[in-house]
Length: 261
Ligand code: COA
Image (tube, rainbow, N blue to C red; front, top):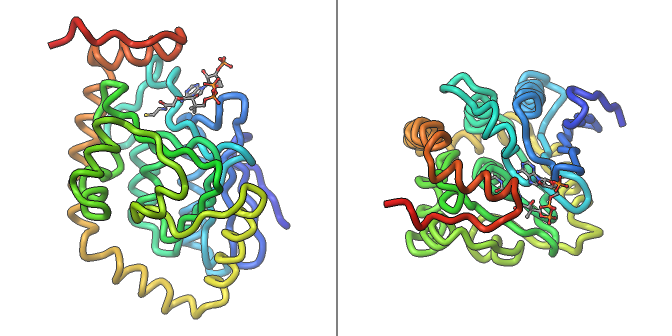
């Protein structure tokens, strides 16, 4: 398998028509930094541009997909504006022409869950633990989640996952319409690779056209909502509620929101 290291924590490899993007920063539970977003964006753009690539696969390390955005970066070097690495990554994943498959095990937190909304096939391990704790962090949804989640699962469940920030399993992700299947921890990645191989063997123009037809009817609306969420999210990062939540995480204590109105 040809392997190139775009940034040390994002390992991109190619086999046949499959471009595999592995998030590997295990000491920080694969938390995502600006250079990691940039490397993933570049890899996805490469997948679309290279006629030899038929499908992109996003995965993490064996026991962790990603703990979401790096909290230290949120506090010390937050993204600024629509041209930030995270927003460019979200734009890329929204507009990706070729299919994206995800293989998820362990924590898939924040953008680790919302990026799945832009994948075409999602395979989870039994050990997958998904969560969108934006509200618990004093933030708001991102990646168009506030548009797509109610559409996929209805308002009550979307509110449950966003406002109560409940953690859910791979089985629940399938039940909620966010994932295709759950496999044992030892086989989820292999199953995802097999699906990629089957996709790569399909007629490529027809696959791209089908993805476009599936996504196009709501792309503009998702993009608009993503932009609105992004503006609010960036503003919230400096808000006292979010500072308290993130400081509490770093200091390994419970946050105290009692003083806020
Ligand atoms: N940003 C920065 N560092 C992170 C991180 C993140 N998003 N997630 C985990 N880490 C760090 C921890 O601070 C810890 O560092 P330490 O070894 O110096 O104490 C290390 O990674 C291991 O994390 P830990 O919490 O001990 O692992 P765990 O297996 O018990 O729990 C998670 C894993 C993902 C459930 C937990 O780390 C978590 O909730 N992380 C925050 C997720 C989050 O809120 N992301 C942002 C969403 S917008």
